[in-house]
Length: 148
Image 1 (tube, rainbow, N blue to C red):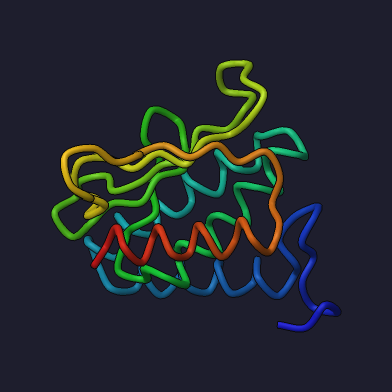
Image 2 (cartoon, helix red, strand yellow):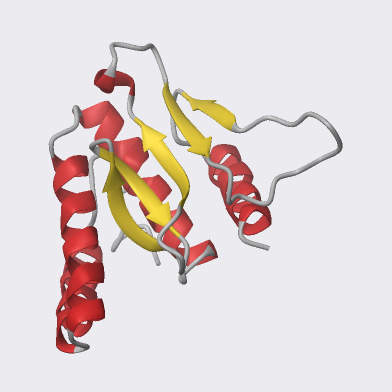
């Protein structure tokens, strides 16, 4: 996307919103499983919409990055947070926004199904204070590894 069609600091562009709405309609058209996925996407987008401007900007970019890197993960909410589940319905990762518990940063949290194993100890939670190109690159790498 060009800078003209993508709003990176204050929310999804009109084109991105239209694409997500179209995808939700496609999922509903697929029947019961599709409707469940569409409901999950709607719940996730509603959770993002309720966030502060700063948290929403991060959450929207996380959503775009996760869906680009791992299109097979199903968007949903988990404890009211944006989350993404595998084909078995198990949450692989979620985003805890800073406003959720009054923290100074949001955190991208990976759950047990995430394939981030690295020896006997590895990180499963990453603080995100602001979305930058380097943050996007790191999140994309983590998501790609988590679903590999």
